[in-house]
Amino acid sequence: MKSIALVVALTYSFSFSGFSQDFQADSAEIVRIIQDVFDGMRESDTSKMAPYMHPDVRMQSLNVSENGNNVTQLNGASGWLNAVAQNTGQVWNEEVSNIRILSDGSVATAWMEYKFYLGNELSHCGINSFQFIKIDENWKIIYIIDSRNKNNCQ
Image (cartoon, rainbow, N blue to C red; front, side, top):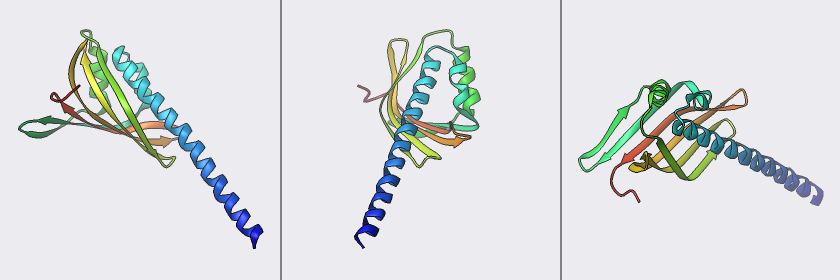
């Protein structure tokens, strides 16, 4: 009986250990993707962004104001990528922090705080939520929603 308990305990131990290693690897990859996407935006280089976008990606923003919240629908990745590619003015700098990842190995969520700067001037802040799916061993962004707040940014 003790040997059965030991085998069961070791099996669970190895299962959780493997899951933990997979989760850590997936989390590191997702954070790297997020960094690459925002590096591409800062540099107006969509070649650093587009490979991570699923063709059917959806994007939404929630503008937080004193008059209530307004949801705006963007044109998926193509609208964002076109705007980034055409930006010849001030640098678009989105600084993210406190990234939290949840993943089961095929679907993942990355939740993070951000501050968006036009050049050196703080424009707005909020929360980004990126939804990922894994296709052919590659993580792709399938959905992005963010809140945009011009007040209470510090």
